[in-house]
Length: 407
Ligand code: AMP
Ligand code: MG
Image 1 (cartoon, rainbow, N blue to C red):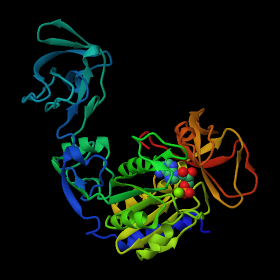
Image 2: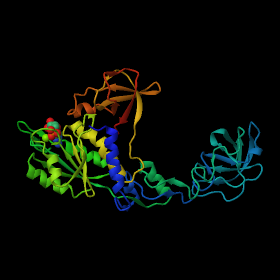
Image 3: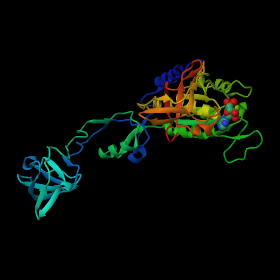
Image 4: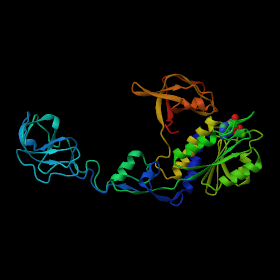
């Protein structure tokens, strides 16, 4: 059995060998559709930001040397507001009324907030305190200068990035085409979600969790339905799935008499790189490829399927997308209570993480094992437990993968 690291290395090196400018090619999408996609161009500032010295407060723009520590009375010579600046110059003994976001007029060196002023008479403002140079002014180019690289190709586009791309004038954005991911669930016991399961039957849930995981990872999922534990049916569905960029088959990869998936992969000429990983859950994870299609046989148990996806399929999708963040987030937490390790397999177990007294604290959740999606739903993290004898004691530092709200 190979380790998770070895398995991941096999997946990523095979993907790196195949990925290129044409796999996945870049495509242009309208800005609003680009969130969640992977950028395939460099985004540079097309102007200084802010484009002028900008007031960050409502108040009065003035010359610092006109004020004592307790202020001064100044003549109001104009108004500068967002979208319409004062075109004159603020001279000695003068000030300009100014609004948040407006350009600071020539001559002015600071903005004193309106809260620190009085209006003793028309055209005069009484400033009630001193000011330092640059106070309440955000200088031109403070955020970015023209031609600065804001983010490079490979950036996973986030919500705030849409605002930046809008600021720099990108109405169309070049992003990676989404890899097409076929999903086949296998098992004679499975019925569709809209059916009442009979005796010995359960509803197919893996197709749905995998569908959502593919979406979150940035792929384009397609459900090909349920294949029976029957060679002909499996051939049909697997043959169809091999026409996509990635084929995910759940179930039928253990050692049971009706676990036929690997045999069908072999018939189709899928080159299998590994079919067992020293992990818990998720041991019977199969990975291979045929031509340009990457193929996974994922363990049937619902949580095992999700864990295997998270550890191997997600990085593959990110890599094909040419994303900079292939590995995903791994953080550290302190164990609140002791946790049992497996002496052979690395464990990836649902857990609950809270931020307490300056660090992440990790606790167990009520989880009944690899079929227990209800237990998983109580968790907000997978804790990664090394393979070793016995227990990790409370206070030990462990790694965890946060489960994003959408996963
Ligand atoms: P298998 O790997 O095919 O032996 O499946 C292992 C366990 O996972 C069995 O209890 C199956 O009933 C269950 N299982 C397999 N596929 C699915 C699925 N698509 N949805 C829900 N449970 C499944
Ligand atoms: Mg099965």
